[in-house]
Length: 222
Image (cartoon, rainbow, N blue to C red):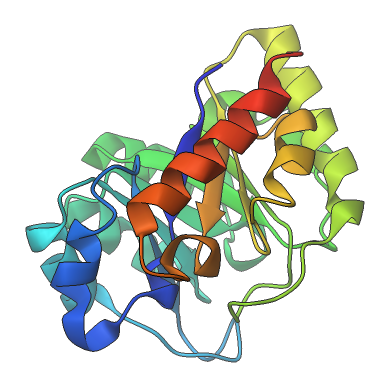
């Protein structure tokens, strides 16, 4: 099973963002957290900024929309050329129609669930998505502690993906570090968002390699 490491630029230096993007060129995708100060109590970037990141990034964009009214706004991020666009189940009126719209534009379609949201209603919809993001912290802020109580959701997703043979990436975001990545990998995650665990310290590339090795060591049982 391939392991993907997607560094979150929430932990990057916003003034020197292009340089900080170059420092994670060995990662798989760059995780771009779009927050609207409404769905979550924080504000980050909009389409203009994400478009510029798309212009200069050495690796494809994995856009995570923590915004209200995803049905209206998500397609615009796919139109920018983002490789993957993930919206929140809690913020979409018609997740299936939205996922189909994103795919029709050419992006991978992802759906995210907060820690308190049940995954059961979405298991039968898995063919409509390319990625499911299980939030391992409450969305909105970086630097929170990993919530192991979200792992049963991952296990349920992993079992359904295995049963159906679908190519759905299972992503985790929140509190992912060299200490916790193995827990998520063992539960079935294969795509890992990490912020401070990548950008903390002086060598993001070494941190990416460390996380990748830790995740791979825990997935050999699958």
